[in-house]
Image (cartoon, rainbow, N blue to C red; front, top):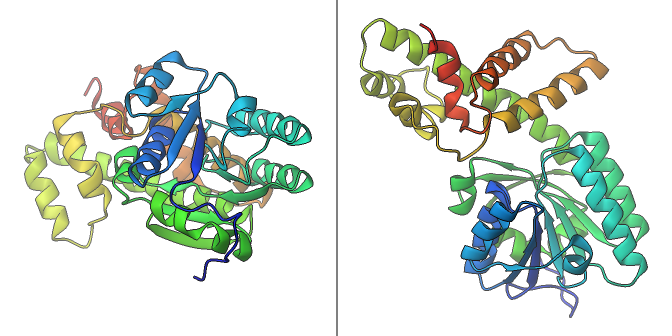
Length: 301
């Protein structure tokens, strides 16, 4: 895609701000820094901020000062409410003449929240783009995740070099709002892939089949999915150190089920998946990796 010329186009030395320095925010910050960007950040969590500082992120005390100090702002917050709060703060910053040229929403949120954020940014002459990522934080850091892009073509063209740096693999779904819709549908499939793998693995191990051997079998069979490679070994070893968080996918499932209710579309498998994740959270595994879904199937068994 051709990149439009002009001094307003941030190159790979842009000042990039990141609000929300959790797993995804830190992974994107690391990619931006590795590409030569100056990376600034803010998070309400002291622990997350400290981990980002260790990666070379310069911390600022609040969203307003962050917005006024960067050309591009990545929003990596948890949910709709946090996205709305950040959008309101950015509107105030823009009214004071201190706003970035582009806001990129990397959060998984409802289409309604994405549409509202896009409209608010447009009212304040801030370019807006969606970039939710399909993949773990490790995959994002390594450039292996898929970025779902919701943006006007001219906006994407203007900032394409930076987007290529943040996520080399992309799919332009449509205008702002389209990526939120596509991310929820793709997350439904992703989560069920993990749950199906966990259930099959639990059965295989219960029948006396070595877990690692069973993964090798799946790799050669029509039952193979990428989940076999991305989370399968951690399910076998019961290594639940977070590359993503189980409670976050449960939040996504709530959004998925809510959106389905508006169509309406029955999602019986996703309803069963939500109940399974609720069991995992009740076992204290909400902050664990999504691989921990297998523990909800085997606990007490």
